[in-house]
Length: 164
Image 1: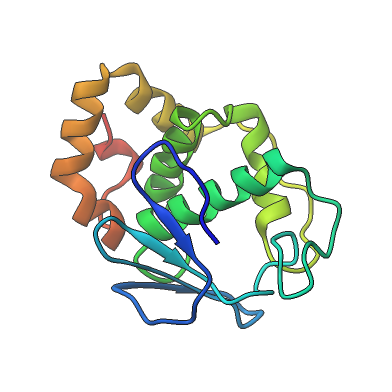
Image 2: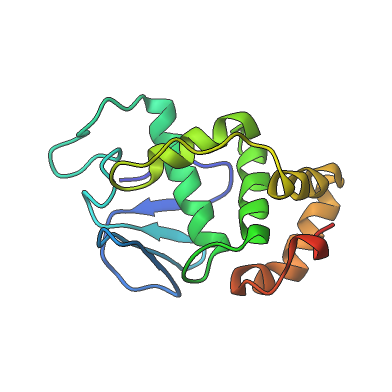
């Protein structure tokens, strides 16, 4: 299964191990590997994505594409475990650049989580403030900062205060 994204990426529904593995308590494992990056997840790992019998829930095409974007960016900014606030801010900024407004992100994240998820809070607070600071930079400066700090963001050592 392949989905178009803003950058040259593709989705592969496989169980291969990659350089980044993100797993949750429901047994779903996402991996990110390769160049261009490939987000791999087992069929049926997330109930709002199609499995072997298609969609299990009523998901619109837009929600489906946005869930894939959210899952890809989550795997991209997080090398393992729970996200740090800075990783959440970078993910929020990249989702905004991908066309998912801050206001829509908490609901999307709740939909994308496996199993029943409580409604997430509104898109306010220090994480979104940091995301807005990053997005306030010109696109070339955003790219330069992300390129220079991607390893530190993924490893979780960058803090919100260290973000632009």
